[in-house]
Every structure is written in structure tokens, then in C-alpha cells.
Image (tube, rainbow, N blue to C red; front, side, top):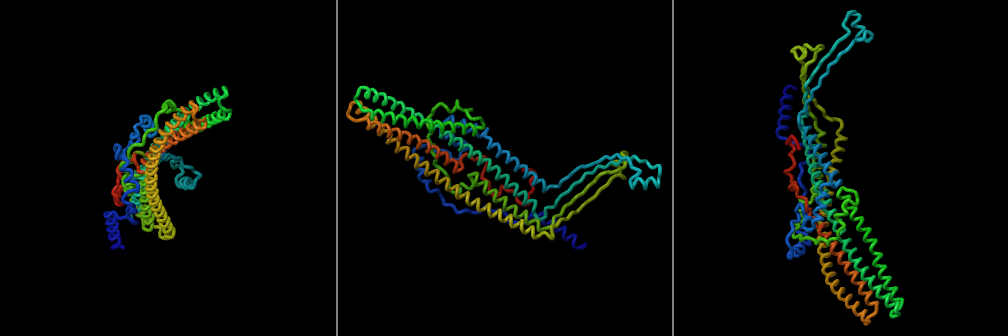
Length: 500
């Protein structure tokens, strides 16, 4: 036994010096990804005629060159309540890391007590004292103060693995805050573009109502004069009612979009009507020339960083569970002073001290430990699958957003050419009708076609700009508050850090 003690002590100290930790060391999994996106070449070709935009800029929304958009996005990032909840969760994760770090360090405590008592003669002790010394002093006091310290020796690295998991969870929470910021910014920008698009559609509908009302007035005068039949008058009135019927739907959509913006800004609905009510053009989609590669998304898109950090945390928890196979040692000690009076406190006779070497080993609980390890491995496998799936969805988001942007812009150009042609046709048919060359049917048909063309063009413009917002979100633009997280950013199992 005497020979075994030095050997055990030297083994323990060697393990501590080496900083070993049980369980698998984390390595970021390699994911298969193509060298570039399918639509990268087309997006770069689109940018030839424009000025390059920094897709990863923290203020990407300024590329729309709309002061109102910049104002409301900045306000949403400052006052949004969903974002405030996410920031609070980051603080919670930072506190959990502090607790996990503190578990690696010795703990100390100071405790004391001062007792005054009056002894009962009827208690067992009182009866003994009364029998041996009837005149004993029934009043007494006891004073004690102690300073103690304890330290769990993390010989096999279970506590260090727990801290490693807490560090990864904090990094995931911080990346989650970045994801929330990006989500809020894109949500506000998208809703703002919807507001501007609906305003333009309402303006077009009102212009068509004015034109249709003028046409109805002309036809009515001709009908009263007996020049045209009642059928033509009713057709004109029916076309007017169709345009008028579209207005309430557009107005309801516009009100709902404005209310959504107010809530996103952390205010009651109606708070920003003065800022949003003045009609303004739909902001054009900025140039996005560089989106990087699918591999770049793994380090730039915050939701992918969240998934990867959660995988790292799940991996560390396997080691924490495996450490339960091994014994846990702890050191403890206490020094203090105790006396039945106050005069002798802190004197040599009143001093007291103790030391403790503790051992805890779950010798007969290996079945439960096996289950805990299996559960940890299952959670790690789940996190790995979630990370791979998130990476695939991220690439899908980028491809879909880019192709939507390109196709909507192509649609807008086509509709613009058609609008010019139909506007000329409408003017020609109106002049021909007033000259008596064509019937009202041709005029109504030209009006209907022009209205549909203008409305479709407004929708295409709005959707193209919204697709640009979706592209910024898909490539992780706007989240560059900290460098990409790599394996070196996680404290090694043997490292003790005093704070987060």
C-alpha cells in the first residue's frame, strides 16, 4: 500500500500536467460542396452594368439607396423585441460558461456562528449535569469561525469537457444573435418593399379608375344623345367597377404590411404612418456580384455556425459522460477558531484545522453510464445530421434566391417593353374611338390590357427587389460582427480560462 500511494500520486499529477480528457476530440466534419453556385456566372454577368456591392457588408440594405429603408432597418435592429430575447439568451449562455469555468477552479467559503444558550435541567444532558453538579452554570456561549476550500481534481477531463460544451453553446448563442439580426433586417426590408409595391399598385389602380370614369362620362353623354347603345354604357360601367373592386384588397394588404413593420420596430401599429404614407418608388435591387462558394457559407452564414457549434457541444458532452466511468478525486481543507467564550477566539488553544481527500466512484452504476454515453452519442449524431441538412438548405436558398432575382428582373424588362407598346395602343384606340373609327370594345380591351401590364410590372419590380433581399439573407450578408469560428477558438480540454 505504501508503494502504491506514490505511484498513484505521480500518475495523477502526470495526467493533470498532460491535460488529458476522456472522449473524442472535436473535428469539424468535411462536407461535400461544389466549387461554385450554379447561378454564380449569371449573377456576375448581371453586375457588369452596375457598381459592385459588398454582399457581406453589415449595412447591406443601404445598397437600395432608400433613406427610409435604412432608417427603419436601423431602428428595428435597435428596438426589435424578438432580437432583445435572443440577446438575453446570449447572456444566459455566457453565465453558463462562467459557471462551467468556475467548476475547474478551487472554491472557498467563510462561515461562522455565535451561539448563546440556556441549558434545560429536564433534558438528558441537563439531568446528568444537575446530578453531578447541582449548581452548574446553565448559561453558556459558543463561537466559531472557519475558512474552508475545496477542489475537485479533474483528472480525466469530465469538467473540462463540460466547459468545452458550454463554450460551444455560447458561440452558438452569439451566432444565433447574428442570425436573428440578419432575419430581422431582411424581414423589415422585405416588408418595406411590399409596402412600396402595394402603394405603386394602388396608384396605378387609381389612375385607371380616373381614366375609366372619364370614359364612362363620355359614353353616358353619347348614350343620352342616342349615339351608342345601352350595352356599351353598361360595359364601361362594369369595367370601372372591376378596377374599383381591386382597391380595397390592395388597401387591406398595405395596412397589414404597415402594421407588421410597426411591430417589427417594437411599436404599436400606426406609429410610423407619417414615415411610410408618402408614396415612393420601389427601390431597385442593388448589384450583387460576389456570393462566394457553398463552402464559404459554412463560415459566413450564422445559422450554419449555430448548427456547427451545437455539433461541437454535443461532441464534448460525450467526453463528459464517459468521464463518469472513472473515479473523481477532491481535495478539501479548513482552518478556523472555535471557543466557548469570546476572549480566547483566535488564540493558539482555539485554533482548529482539517484536511480531506475525497473519492467518488460509480463502481456499480456502469449500466446507467453506458446509457448516458449512448444518449450523448445519439445527440451528437442528430446534431451532425442537422448540420449537414442545414448546409444543403443554405445552398438551396442561395440558388433559389439568385434565380428568382434574375428571372424577376428579366420579367420586369419584358413587361416594361410591353407597357410602352400597350400605352401607345391605348392612346391610338381612344383617338380612334372619339373619331368614330372603332367601337368601345377596342378601347375597353386596350384599357384592360394596359392595366394588367402596369400592375404586373409593379409586381415584378417589387418581387425582384424582394429577391435581392432574400439573396442577401441566403449568403449571410450583414453578419460580419466577428470572424468565422474555427477549431482553435475553442479552449483545449486542458486549458483553464478565468472568464468567458
